[in-house]
Structure formats: structure tokens, C-alpha cells
Image (spheres, rainbow, N blue to C red):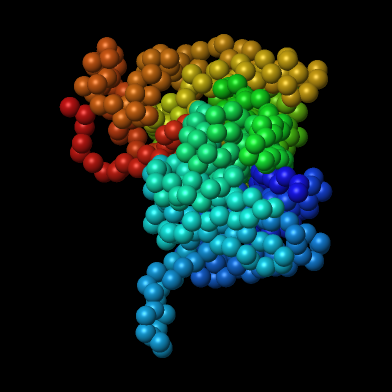
Length: 561
């Protein structure tokens, strides 16, 4: 008898596009069959995309997903793939209140996060996710009903356990019962969002579960982007001793094929993609996040202010890598305070990436406002940013570009952005990247160009002077960021402790930070919550991004003692 061949289909899906997702399942199942697979496993919520949030609560959406599921089962058989076991994720539903009396009205139905086995043209098995995460970006406990059954399927006479994502992160539950069912393999369907360092956590956890069930674990993960979330793929198979037997590359669709040998055989090894270095991993996450947001929302181009500074330069490089430099519109909007070197750097950057570069001076527009309003100080500075925002939105409305906000996490934390000005836009690619990391990623991208990572003979996309010059908003004569902020290296360290790790003033002082710096930074962060609520969505790459991860009231009298 042949050994079961397992295929992990690491694919990109689109939320709500059940017909296209079903076609993707059919296409990759065909490829898996051609590779000799007996079982192909797709990610969590394959047919619906993930996360579907409150779409799950709509009965019409659940009916649409179920119809797509049934069509997929039929289509697989019609194409001669009926013998192939196909595990897909979708939204199911269950009766929450059982009906005990004949003729009694049916109780309410709740959606479930479901894995379904398709084979021989029909639905063979359904399994509802047990553990529903309710932390960080997850809100599944509010949406779904949990399952309570254990799922074990037969593949060429071998018993294969099936669970979904969070089911392996929590002790107990279905995994704890797998050893009782004597499984030869545990497969896990996942839509696990990316954050830096999480890949190692997944591998360590899967190794622990493999040891518990005394069988290899095959972990398949979604790839692509949905709103502010990025899914990095990185699917893998791990042995009971923690050895990675096969691994797919990150941030690309991939079919990972692996053979489940007999219990007395040494574990088979498949292709093992090398892990990415930290800066490359984060950079590719940002590219994936922007590409997904642009394409899945029907845009073909982006526009933003190309100032010559480091933030817009990094956003430009990410944009060019995501959708092609020819689809990037960079607008230089100089004021009377704009330096010549900034204008030169912006033009140089646009040339390096092949962007559509435009120059629109703002002085006449600013003068028109100031002649009517007699503004000075901060109001005059913010006016310049808001005029630029108006220009970008006008180009978006007239030409159909997506406006990008180029602000970074450090600026967002301390409120150094102008609402309706540089904060304007539909997406913020580096929203979750602090200023210190912005420089690191810019240097990495230039080094990658020199090393041929993105192709031979590529010119480093970011002008060196954009990286080395002191950062400035250039809203008044001689202005630099450090006029009103601590050095960025120190500022980011304080912000990491206060925002990421929720340390209070006392803890920060105990670590030796200057009280004046601590008090200034905490005051800036606390009073900027209203701005952060209005900032565009942006790619999440850290464990705690502004948005779903950090939910604080805007109106509060609490201040750190």
C-alpha cells in the first residue's frame, strides 16, 4: 500500500469572494492531485476569507458560503478528483438550543468556524473549532459558537486528526484527545496573522503538540493580506522530536508536499525554505500588506506626498515593490520652507523607482488662506499640511489613486501628525513601524538592491541623503524633529516600554529614564488617542499595533502617577 502524500495548500483568499475562493480551491486541488497527493489541506476559513468579522452573523452570507462549498464538492468529482481528500475551511452553523419536543420551533443558529472534508463529490465530515480567541486582533468568541467533537479522518488507512488554529494554542480540548485516537498525523488549518517573531512561536508550539500526540504535525497557514492584517504562510511539517521536516516560504502562495511514511520508517523530509532575516521579513510583510489592500479594494495605483524625507522614501520603495514603480504617483508639494536638498532627494527617489513624479507648489494656496485667516504658529504649520492633504485627495478623486499616509508608529504615538493633513489617506503602510526601524528597513532595502535580492543590477531605491539627514517636517525655518522631541532612539525605547509593554511611570523611572523625558512622552501619547482613532488602517507587524490591539478610551482623566 502506498504511503499517504499530504499537500499543504498555502493560498491567498479574499474575504467575501466565495466563488473566486472556491475556484482557487479547485485549481490548487488539481495541482495537488498532479503532485500525487492523497490529502490536500487548505487554510482556515478558505472559502470565506479571514477574518469575516460580523459577516458571519448574516444568514445570507452563511448560505452563500454553503452553496459554494457544495458546488466545490461537485466540481472536484466532475474533474475526476473525487478520490482526493480535500480539507477546506469555511463558515458553518449550529443549533445552539437543541429542540427536544417534536413540533417545537427551531432554536437560534450561530455561525461556527468550520473545517470540512470533501471527497467523492460530497461533504464527508464537518468539524467546528473549539477554542475561539478573544484577545489582540481576534474577536471570535463574540461571533462564533464553539464545537465539541473530535475529528479524525482516514487517509489510505492512516488516522489523521484535524484541528483549527487556536485549538493547538490552548491546552486541553481536542488535541488532548488525539493520543487516545492513535493518530498518525495531526493537521492544523490556520489563518494566523503575521507579527515579528511569531514564526518561532508557531514551530515551538507545534513541536510540543507533536510530542503530545506522538505524531507529526502538519501546519498550513494562510498567505496574503486583509485590511490591517498580513498572513505570512510559512506552512510546515514538524516531527515529534521538533525537527522541521518541510517548510514553505513566507509571503507567497505555495504547495508544500510531504509523505507520511510508516510508523517504523524514519520521517520523510520535504523541501525546507530557509527563514527570512528579521528586517527582510518585516519589509516583505509591509509589501504584502500594501499589495493586498490596494488590489483587493480595486485600486491600481497609489499617490502620496514625496517630500524627500525618510518616511515617504520608505513608503515609495514599498509601493514600488508592491505594485510597480510605474503605478506610484509621488507629489512634491514644496512650501517656502522646503529645502533644495529635500526637493532634489524627492526627484532622485522618483527616478530610481520609475514613479510618476509631479511638483505642485503650495505657497499660493497657503497665502490665500493666510490672507483671509491671519494664522501663525502651529495653526500656520498645520495649514501647510492640510493644503497638501487637499491636493492629494483631489488627485485621488480625479484620477482614482489610493492616497497613502506615510506616517510611522513613533509619530502616531506622540501625535506628531496633522489630522486632515499628513494623516489623510486610505492606508498607512508603515503605521506599525517605529522611526528607528524605518531607518533600518531603508538601509536593508538599499543593501538588498546591491546584493541583487530583487533582481540584477538594481539601483538602491532610497537616496542616501534621505537616510542620513536630520528628519524635519520643514514647516518653519530651520525646523528639525529633535527641536521638540527626544532623540528617536531614546523616544522609541520609552514608547516601547509604555505602549508595547504597558509599563507605567513608576516602572519607567525605575528603569532609569529621565523623569522629564518620561513625563513629556507619556503626556504626548495620552492626549493623542483621538488622532490615532482617525488615522487610516495600516499593516500590523508588531505584537501590539495601534488599532484592534490597543483599545483605550479617548475621554479619560487617568494620568500616570
